[in-house]
Image 1: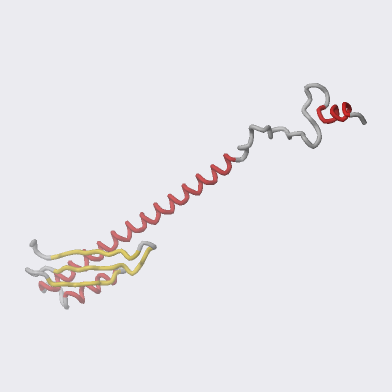
Image 2: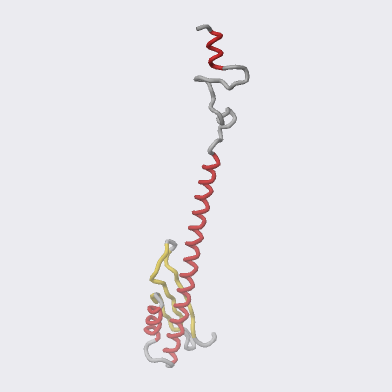
Length: 143
């Protein structure tokens, strides 16, 4: 085999793409090195969107639990103030603890203020990754 015939096998006829070991497959031109990068970019973007949604759901859950803790504190403070004024029977802090327990919370502090007012702090029994939700309320006549 001569050199010229060998060259013809590799390059073929004029205008044909090269064949053999040096041939570059169709669609894989030297300037097309970024093939498949769109898939990687889409996967990365999907991951970022999923992480953002997970964070949003976590914050929404924390906001809901904070509202529940505030509601439990409000109702516990009202029950304690009613017991303090004699509207209902029982000790003020006991009444506050009972109401808070019905709302899934625990009374952290129960303090009698001036002028027949009560200040109650509660903490929800349910926790999130960000911690326990707490609430604080004061009930009684205006200060």
